[in-house]
Image 1 (cartoon, rainbow, N blue to C red):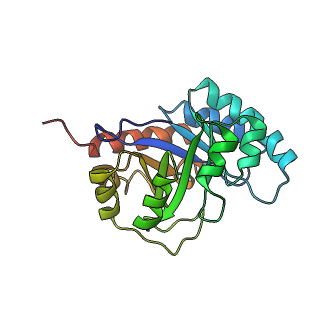
Image 2 (image 1 turned 135 degrees about the horizontal axis):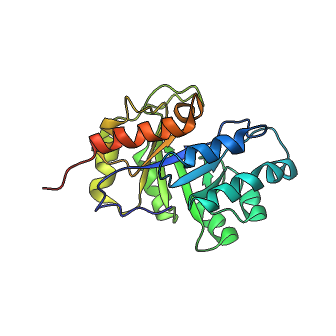
Length: 217
């Protein structure tokens, strides 16, 4: 999961799993990744032990590898290490990026949730994070959030820092344009992909991003 951040011409997609990744979800992930390029997939499950989480992750990890899509584990450095994931995404209470780096190695992608805080984002960058995530920009059915950053936080980050930034929270093809224009390197999306036809939804995001992307002078 990498971005040519200051030379960015478009945003990339970062899919976040629903909590239920059993049953036919591997087929739905395969369909989504067939709808157009996806930079990363975040494996986010709750209330299951690590053994079960690892079992659920294996087929999804294989699908992501086949599509050159980074496989990121939410919250758990231990699980990311156990399954050889491409990286981990840390909330504010999930640990230090420095410690995660020591455990997962130099090549791991480490992201940090920063809500609407410029201070948290700068701290994460100083701690060696590979990307910072701001949100929720819109009301989300996936995860409740009291934080509502404005577009200015993306513009500010892009104007100063080299580390990529992710926009998250209630993003759809209909509302993503301003985030693309403001400089989000990645759009983190969940319900807007998994509700309905995943391939068609991913394709709709790519059309919306193309329409909003800054044009070369």
